[in-house]
Amino acid sequence: MSTETEEEEDVEIIVIGFDDDGNEIEEDEEEHFVKDVDGVVDMTFQDKDFRRISYDNNDRFAIYKLMAYFHEDVVRGGRVFCAGAGALGNEVLKNLALLGIGEVWFADFDAIDVSNLAKSVLFRPRDIGRQKVEVAAERLADMSPETKWVPIQGDIRYDVGLGVFRRMDVMMSVVDSIDARVGVNRICAALGKPWLDAGIGELSWRVSCWDSAGGPCFECIMDTAMRQQQHLPYAPTCAPLAEAIRDMNRQPTSPLAAAMSGAMMAQEALKLLHQAKMETPPKELEMPNGLQYYFGGGSPYLEVQTRNQLEGCPGHEFWGEVHEETSFTAEGTTLRQLLVKGAELLGVAEQKVAVPLGFDFIYELYCHQCKTRTERYTPRRVRTLDLSCPHCENDEARPEYKRALRIFEKFADKTLAELGFPKLHIFQVHGGGNTIAIELTGDVEEVMGG
Image (cartoon, rainbow, N blue to C red; front, side, top):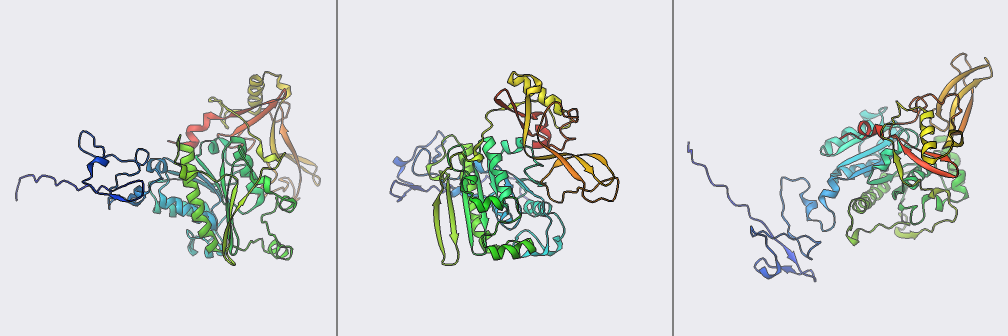
C-alpha cells in the first residue's frame, strides 16, 4: 500500500456573470470582475448585476443559492409562526420545510379525523385520533431536520404568550374561522406586525397581507354578515349551504386550492421574512400590504383586489413599546404585583389601574341546583368548555366573568399562571388615561429556548 499522500485536486469553480442586458459574460473578460488577494471573484447582486454561482450536489439547499433575491442566511435564521395545521396549514408547513426555514412555530387544537385524509399531505390513516400538530411535527422533522419545529396544542388567542409572537419574524394565519382571524389581527396590530392570511374553498382561494400600522387590516374588510358569523366555526356565504354546513360542522374545501394558495403563502412569507430581517431588502421583495390575491377556479382567473382602511376600525390598536420586566414570570408573579408595577410605571394609584382582556374571563361557577360557588379561571369562549358543577350532577352551572381585572379582585393574589395566562405573556395596563404594555420577560429563556 502506498504511503504517499496524494495532493488534493483543485476544485473547479464555475463563474457565470450577466451584464445589464442579461447577456452572459465570458470568464476571460476579466475587466468585468474584481478579484481579491487570492484571485477569487466575489460577485453579489448588491454590488454588481452579476454574481458568482457554485453548485454543490451534497448540499440539499444548493439550488436555492442560485436565486438572485432570497438570502440563505435570512432564510436559515428566520423564525415563522403559522396559526393552523389543517389542509392549508399542511401545505404551508410542507413548503417551509422544503425551503429550510430556520425555526417554525405552529399551533392547532384539533385532532385528525377521517375527512382530513383527503386534504392533508402530512397525515396518514394510522394518524386518525392523534393531534394534528403532533403528527405534523413528526413528518416535518423528517423532511427538514435542520429546522427547529415547535408544535403548540392550543388556541393562539389564549394559550400562547404575546411575547412569543413579538419575537417572530413572520406571522401567518391559515385558520378556518372569522373569529380566529380577528384574533390574529388584534395580536399583530398590538405588536405592530404585518401578517399573512389565506383561505380556501372548493375551487377558489385567496392570500392577503395585512399591516394595520400602515394600511387596511383584516377587520377593515368585514361586512355585517361576516361580523354575524364571527363567533361561528365556519364562514359560509350561501344561506342554504350554511344550514347544511351548520349540521355537519364542515366547510367544503379541496386539496387543489390548498396546494395553490399554500405555495403563494410560502413565497410571500419568504418576502416578508427578508423585509423583517434586512435593513434594505431587494425592491423585488416588496410586500403587497393591503392587497388580496383572489383565484377563482371555475373560469379560471386570478385578480388582485385593493383593500382600503376603514375609518374607526377597532383592529388597529397598537400597544406601543413593550416594557420588559425580567423579574416577572407567569408562575411567580401575582395579578396584584402586575397591577402594582403598572401603577408605578404609569405614575397613578394602584386602585386606578386595570388590565382589559378583550374576552370574557370566567372566575367562578355558580350552581343554582346545589347553591355552591366554585373557583374557575378560564376564557369563556373556548372549545369544549366544561360548565358542570363539581359538587352535584348539574351539567351547566352559571359562569361569573369579567372583562377587565383590578387590584381589588378576590383572586388578586393568585399567580398569573393560576389564573390561566400563558408564559411570556404581555399585559396592557390602563390607568390615568394612559397605557403601558408589560411583558413577563422572566419566561423568555424557558419559552423561546436557545
